[in-house]
Amino acid sequence: MECVFGMVGDGFALVAADTSAVHSILVHKSNEDKVMILDSHKLLGASGEAGDRVQFTEYIQKNVHVYEFRNGIPLTTAATANFTRCELALALRKNPYFVNILLAGYDKNIGPSLYYIDYIATLHKVDKGAFGYGSYFSLSMMDRHYKSGMSLEEAIDLVDKCIIEIRSRLVVAPPNFVIKIVDKDGAREYAWRESIKDAAGVSAA
Image (cartoon, rainbow, N blue to C red):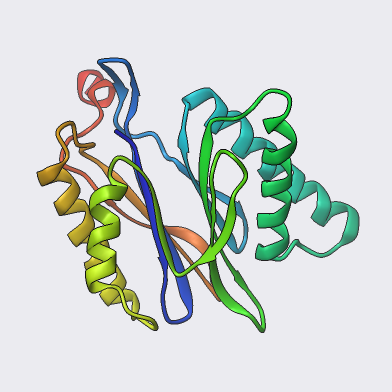
C-alpha cells in the first residue's frame, strides 16, 4: 500500500513518501526511506517493487554523479528527468523495472520543478503528483486544496492533510511518512510523520 506524492510551491518543491517495506502480508520495516537525494538540488521519490526501486534509483543517482564528474557541471532537473525516462524506455523492451518516480529539483534561473515518470516511461512536468494506492486520496486532497505559489507552511499543512486522509481511509494504511524539500539552499530532509517506531529498533532497545 505504497504512497509517494509531491508538489511545487513558491521557490521550492517537496516529495513525501511512506516508509513501509512490505512483502505479501508481512511488514519488514517501517523506516524505509523511499525519497533519495540524487545530488545537491534534486530529490527522487519512488514506489514499486522493492528490488527494482532500489536498483534503478541507485543506478540513476550514480549516473547523475558520473555526468557531473566528467563534465564539471550538474545535469538540470529536466535533463535528469529525460535521462531517467530514456533508461526506463530502454529497459521496457528488455527487462522492465516496475518503478514509478516523482523527480523534484531546483535549478538556478529556472526555479523548482516536479516531474512525473511512470513504469512505462511516461514523462510529464507537473505541479503536483502522486503514485500508489494512497494517490486516490492524496490527489483528491491536492485537487481541493493545492494552489500555485503556496508557501512552505501551506504546503506542509497540505501534506499533513493528505497523510491524515490516507491513514483514515486506506484499508491497510502505512503508518510513517518522510518529507523532503529542495530549494535554492539544496535538497534535504524536512520531517518525519510517525505513528509507530520501527519494531527492530524497539526490540533492540
